Length: 284
Ligand SMILES: [Fe+2]
Image (cartoon, rainbow, N blue to C red; front, side):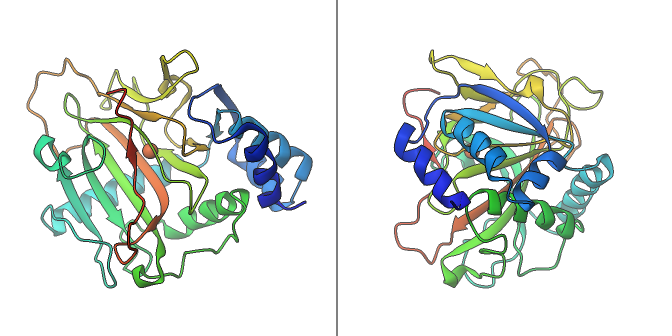
């Protein structure tokens, strides 16, 4: 049985999950060993848990040196260019955008953050592309794809890879409850570049998913800088407002707040009726 067939088997049995059952943990090394060696017993177990609504926390996915470089090089990019927006069409440049309350209205689901977008056809602005791609290929293989799927595509091919780093500044930063499209990749692939409670980060808010009782499950408590999480994209999730009681002026270009990295294979803007994030209209 292939990895894709294991996914198909459990999706047929349980359906696509919308609510979170809980979390479980592996180190990234344990996970990549199982995937690369095609240990189908272990992979079957992981996929079954994910389709039943669990979220997998991959401990120690990136070293602290790598997460530091991701943040430092994101900030260097902010200094080189102004906040802007570019559709994902052939030739699209790497860009960053301060998504404040007003800009947030242009998105399918509410989010306030400073987001930066990096595409494989451009210069490696983050300077850690190899470290990212080595891990993303394992996750793609686990998703039932070819490890190299999409990475050499350009927007007119239809689906292409996009790396996103995000700063959620204190008081302003959040992302409302949503689900992610699952037609190009079944799982959301989220990386954590800061730890709640550390000095010079943030003290409250962060990643949550909606549980079986309709409650918000705080997942941030299980996560530290360098960890990664994957879960089926149809699970309702979001980012609870970061430090709502913060009273100093907000620095959109600073360090303070919650840092995150997302790896996503998107429909480009060349795709008619492209599928994007779906807001959950029942829960804000
Ligand atoms: Fe998401």
